[in-house]
Structures are given as structure tokens and as C-alpha cells.
Image (tube, rainbow, N blue to C red; front, side, top):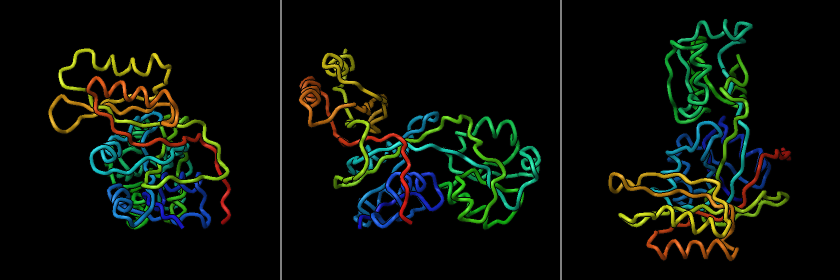
Amino acid sequence: MKRIALLGPGTFTEESAHSFLGSGETYEYVNCKLIDDVFMSTVNGETDYSVIPIENTFDGSVRLHLDWLIHEVDLPMQAEWVFPISINLLGIGAGKGNLEASCSGLTKIISHGVTLTQCRQFLRKYLPHVELEQVGSNGEAARLVSELGRPDVAALAPNGAGMLYGLHTWAPAVQDHQNNYTRFLLVGNEPIQLPGRAPDFTKTTIIVTLPDDYPGGLHQLLSAFAWRRINLSKIESRPTKKKLGTYYFYIDVEASMDSVLLPAALQEIEAIGCQVRLLGCYPTYSYEPVHSEV
């Protein structure tokens, strides 16, 4: 049985993994309190894979997790999927019947930092003066609220976290945008077979570093893909952390390394002095819930 590390329990990562991979007997899920622990459990061989939230529809890339993949670990990307995110206001007791009344007595909100940014408008409108406390996961936020047992402290978290820790849903779906999806990566050293699922397409992710002081380097980099009609679904610059003003380019390519065109494009950009690092060639899946056997 393969072991999979993730932030949990009571997190959107856990919900997405159970929805996509199933919660039966195929995999054993290992809950971790911090994202550092998720990565390192797979690096150290304690688990076979890690599930990593990497990008949100409205908040963009999760930069901390990108930096982990680029700078801290060498774990190939093996699959990715998209999962809808519904953030709920969870508290002690049944609430006060309506949103304004339930929010009126609150003095503190506990949640993950990314979740708080996805609820800015809600917090500004209903809870402008409360203290905001960031913790390592939404499940941890729900656990702390339950442990405190104070009706003036609430969590922003998935409903599953409320069920796990005995909290009530005071307001559902309080995120600023209802079309809210997060992209998750499965990273690990071995390819994984996902029977019964047809991927939308195969994606390849690379990190490219341009040669120093090379005029037109980015144009030549992009041209190598453009004239071959290879689609780049994402290109993002991240600091190398070696010298101020130097950057990597994180690039998602909608093509497989098994094709003829993509390896040729990579050879072309290496010929002009670019450094290319392959982070993974993997199937990508849209949201399609599965039914667990348990």
C-alpha cells in the first residue's frame, strides 16, 4: 500500500485527495501539521508521495510551495488535479440565526494564511475589527477553535474540519469568489498509475534560467516554443535566491516529453545558454469526484 503525506486532518488538501484518489484501501494517508513535514516525509522515505496545493484560481501560485519544489527538494511531479474550494465560517454552538448576528460577537478568526486571503471581502464587510490568526492548516484552525471552546473565536475552514472537531457551520461558502478552485500536485519519486481516470492532457513543468546579460534571451526562449506551436499554460518568474535581480522561469508546457517537438525545443533553448531543469511530465485532471468504497 502506497503512503501519501498531506496537510491534515480537516483540510482542503485532505478533501481533494480523498475525492480524487479515493479513501478506500488503495492508499494510506499520513497527516502532517506543516507543509515542511509533508515534503520531508517523502524526501526521507517515510511516505511514497506528497499532495501539495500549488495554485488557486484567484490567489495565484502558492509561492512557499513553489519555492520548496525549486529550492529545497527534488521530488518529481507525478499527477495534478483541480478541486473546488468552499470556505465556511465554523464556530462553537449553533450560531445566532443569521450571518450578521453570528459575526457580531467574534473577536478572533483562525485560519490558514491562503484561506484568509481568499476571504478578504467577507472579512472586510462582516469582521473588520477582529484579530486574524494564521496557522499551518485549516484543520489546525478548527482544532484550536474546538479546544478553546470560546463562542467569540471562529475558524475559516472546510465543513469536514467542523465535523471532525464538533464545530457548527455558521455561514457556508464565504470565499470572495464562488468559482474557486485549487490545483493540487502529487509529487514523489515513482510514477503512479491511476486506473479508471482519463487525463485531460499531459503537462510538462520546467525551470529555466537565462544566461546572464543576454539581450533578447526571453524572446528566444519563447520563440522556441512558439514556432513549434507548443502551448505554454503558465510562465512565472521566481528569484534564484543567489543574486538580487536574477530569476528562474517556472513554465508549464501542454506537451509530453514523449513527443518529438518538446525535447527539440528544450535542446534549442539549451543551445543559447539556458539552464533547464525538468520538474515533471505528468497527467493533469479536471474535477471529477469519485465514490469511496468506505
